Length: 413
Image (cartoon, rainbow, N blue to C red):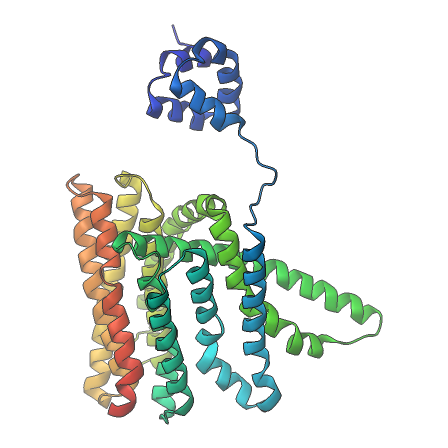
């Protein structure tokens, strides 16, 4: 005869995994059944733990940290806004897009560094070292004369380098915390995206309402409000995530596992469409650029799906999904590498071609290493930790390549 839920709870009170399984199958029914059976099992430590877990309440759904943290976040947000707004006073309209393209990373990452240095009590010598590197990089972009091509490459690779440098001081407990850094960035992307959507809606409604009154202040709004609001978004997102780690942490894995199969299907359709449409990356420069953007996006999704799975061993579904994604991406990457080699052989070497070739070769090598670990997992011979270590061990390699493009290419080309 099948046991009722109360009987199952009573029978398995000393089996944590079974109780967790029952709870996840039906949280509301589990809570009701547990409350009914609790008096008879209240003397056990497991029952006391579950009672505290099910009936724990907080004053607020969101935690907002200490008052000093509020002030620090406000100060950093204002400083980031001032850094974004002040150049508008001396730059002409034509020069503004180029300046922001070159300095976008300096409007966000140094302030995130300051926040994490405060929040996580990072040793002074560590965050100061990265801060000095940021300052030297800023001076380099300001006063180092470059050709337009290498200047664009620097604008692309310098934010990546600064982002990777920030990863190396994140809680400073080795590679495990580089995985935590990847999870953090997934959460920040989610929270920042939601804040930008909400901010965009408020902006549209506000401007629309004032236009109904005959007041057109859109230009003033975009010049004075947005420069303060946009740089503050990642800082506020980091603040909310640090004080409420479980909020975004529960949503990000779900989104990663939902969009993973969709991206895999799109990648297959995209690769197949090339044959029928007649487009190829060998003779079409813009198509090759788009090809590499797709490749990079899929690689990021692979990172996030693997990093967000916190079980001891990846579920078979995730292992198969990641294996198919990685294998398909290797195929796409090989096409991209062959296209770049073809273009170099036909039209000679250039800064753009060498930068893209180096990045693609690194991605290809990294994907092969990831695939090797995934194949081991499919044969039940590899643990998730080995896969995560394979992912994060390559971060310094990407940082070195980004530094080469930023600081050596301008002297080569």
